[in-house]
Every structure is written in structure tokens, then in C-alpha cells.
Amino acid sequence: MRRHLTNIFTSLLAVISAAVMPSCSGSDEPTPEPEPDATDRTILVYMVADNNLGSYYHVDDDNIAQMEAAARAGHLNGGNLVVYHDGASSAPELRVITPEQTIVIKSYSENESSLSVSRMQQVIEDVRTLFPATQRGLVMWSHGTGWLDDAASRTTASTYSFGQDDNSSAGRTTMKITTLAQALDGEDFDFIYFDCCLMASVEVAYQLRTAAKAIISSGTELPIEGMPYAVNIPAMFEQDLDLSKIAANTLDFYLGPTVQYKYCTISVVMTEPLQQLAQATADIMRTGATPPSNYVRVPYFRRSVPSYTWDMADYIRALPVDPRLLDAWNDAFGRTVVYAGATPQSYGLDMSRHTGLGCFIPSVTTDSQGIKSIRWYNHRDLDWHRDVTSLNPSYHID
Image (tube, rainbow, N blue to C red; front, side, top):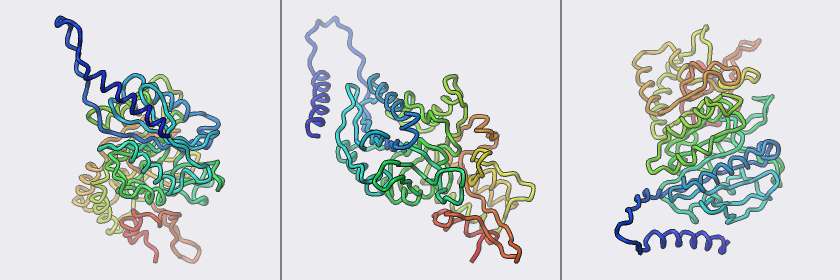
């Protein structure tokens, strides 16, 4: 490891020496253009690819190749691009991608899942120590289902909130969103980009509100290509970080000619206003309002799978509540969701009413004895349920 780090520092020293060496040429030589200021930024791509994304589709290899090409083209702008890669046929390792080469700087045991709290925190601390920076970004790469993790609640899909690690000593492991929040609590990344499906829900964002200043994610399923690293790695290392541009790059990629399935929703959610959004939503929930009987929800899961996340703003704006409550809610929502984009369709779903953030809408039924039951699944475990949804007396059960 020391040899690898020495190579990095030697390369950096060579670059610095070349930059400060006085010119020996004549005075008629043109003055070179000044180099742009380097970014004091480290981006960690946490890639859990020990699943079919790596073993069958090999998307991890393609995405890493895009990162390396961006680095060779000079798009890191002096920043640090670090990848934790847990592949289908290799032990987990930490790599740094430089303009000259990709270097493995640490290997990790396969006896611990990449989706354990201790492993994730260890990797983040390793990166913080080896590549300190005033700005930090995190890309979470794997499978995803948002807040949903109960096997009984989605019988036709795997049971993960984030990630799927198929080759740890524990067998197949996944990570609940509450566990992910525990691993990332207080990290305060400048942004987290979820390169996986179904993570743009208010439940996920609220659970992770101490993990990052902003969250970029998709509320629906994404095609296998995921994020376009060829354009978004350069964007992530621009001097002035523009999160809406990063999200728009992803949408433009799926609107373009190079992909077969032109399906994408993408949002930028700021976490600081989430408390205001929670309060405004709680005020509405306390009224006991429920949607009109003719209201048609906007699902985020494809039509062949029962949806447990629907468009939040479309739902709230359909509730029969005091306009002043709705005005306060719209103000909070506008501060929270600063970018929302969508292709016209997403796996058979009409996205014309997409507003950027999903939520669970409880379904209240009555059994043969007249007793109410609510389909909560693991929603009861979430901070959003405790602070907001459970306050609606039409939904609450003692």
C-alpha cells in the first residue's frame, strides 16, 4: 500500500515541479493559458456489484472504464476519484483513478458484507484519511428499492432497500434504508448520488437527512446503463458544482440516441428544507384528509409490479385541505425538490404528472368484523412514518 501511495505522490510531485519550472525559451514565446483552479473535492463511488449487475451484465466494468476515460481526458480537475469495488469475481478493493493509471490501494476481506454498517463506515473513513478534501461526494452503486424491504410487501422482486451482495460469508445480504442511515449518519456529504432504482422517495430522503446536503436519485426503475459516467464524472469535478446539471445530464442521456430503453426519472432533493416539508405535511395529515374516491395515484413501480411508492406532490395537492396549508406545503416542497426531470414514459407508466419525489400512500381496508387494517409493511420503522404519516387519524391504528 505504501508503494502505491508513493507512486501517487511521486506523480503529483512531477506535475507540481513541471508547473513551477521557469521557462528557458525566448521572450517571444506565447504565454500559456493558466490552468484552471484545482477542486478540493473527493468523490467516492461505493460499488456493490457482486450481483447480476456485475456477474451477468458487467455494468461495473463499463462504468469504471468511463471513469478512467474521464480521468485520462483531464476531467478530474485536481480532485480525487476513489472507487470501492466489490465485484462478482474479485475481492473488495479500494482504487484511486488518476489521469495516469488506476491504482489498488487497499483490499478488504470477503468475510464481511459490503452492506454492513462497519464495512461501509470503514471504507468512508479510509477515504477520508487517504484523500482529505473540503468537499465530498458519494455515489451509491447497486440495486435499490427505496424504503421497501419486507419480502411480503413485494413478492415479485428481491428484498433490498439498497444493495445486493451475493458473495459474503453470510450469503446474499442487503441493506435496509434504516441501516444505511445508521452507516451514513452525520457524514454530511455535499451530495449523494444513488445510481440505482427507486430511491427518490420522501421516506428515503428524510431518513438520510443527516447524511448529505443533497440527494440525487430516481423515483422509478432505471435501465441497466445507470448513470452516464462519461459526462457526469467531469460534471462532478467542475469548479462550481452544479447538482441540477448532473441530474439533467442523466435525463439527457436517456432522451438521447444511444440507449434502447428511454426511461428515466431524476431529482435533486435538498435535505435542509426536509424538516419544513415534514412539518407542512404533518399539518395536512393532522386534518385527517384522504384523497377523493376518484383520485388516481401516480405509481412509481412498473405496471407488472404492485406499487408502494406514488408521486407525493400529486397526492398532496389532491387532498381536500385549507388552501393556506397547501400553500405552505408547496413552498416547502419547492425548497426541497430543486430539480425534477422525467422521460415521457417509464416502463409503461405515464410520467406527465411526475414531480420528483415519491411517497407511500396508506391503503385502509375493513375486514369482515369491521376492523380497520393498514398496509404499512416496514413503513412503521421509518422516521417519516413517526413524524408525519402516522399523525393522520384516518390512517392511524392504536
